[in-house]
Image (cartoon, rainbow, N blue to C red; front, side):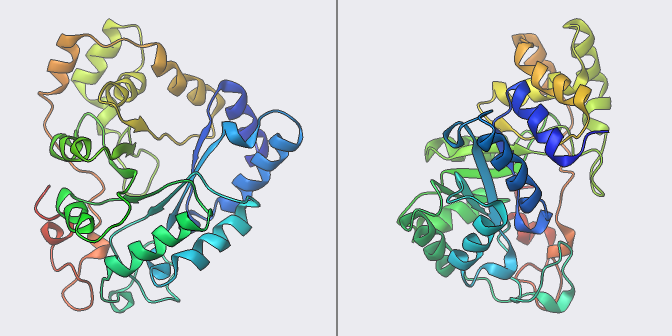
Length: 288
């Protein structure tokens, strides 16, 4: 059994260098402790790491203070990327990934983004971006942003290919980072449907690879970075082995035939009273 610290050391030794966290995950202190130990032991330089964290909805009113707390949790002077986790603003005391109906506040992304830009100006982060933003929401943000988001982190995998969003982000040089790149198995909302898809399994057999490797390589082939989560040493090796898989044009054409299914829909951010989103289509601006 690997503990958190030894797992992170193992990950670094395998060649992983991007670590994705958020205050709402509760993993910032453990991640920071492990990475700082690795830096102190000379295993890695801080400059060789890329650490991403995120602004939770209850901190939209003060991103600078929120990032200060994140840096305190991590024991670091800066993060490489700081993202608005969701286009959702919650009351300041709400720290729950599944907010109650009365927990929402009026969305004010212009003020939130001003705070994100201030984080960058103060040197608390090296880049700022968003997560779970539709094309429409990014377009609105661009109307008032002085700094264009560097990243949009969204659900993306062979069953939810994000064609429209990827094209939109490319036009503005916004990098797409794929979470749930395997469909989020192991999460309470996740599914094994991606790795169990017959087309993915057939392509994996053809290349002597695993379905997970095929799904991850597909994401990389689209120019996205892919985020995976595991504490299993063999699974970590399997995931990074996706770099050695070469998909052919006919493989990509087959994947294009897979029926689309968005797994993480965010129903808990939708209600008829306090949320700015009355329906799922409101949340995603009709893009699902």
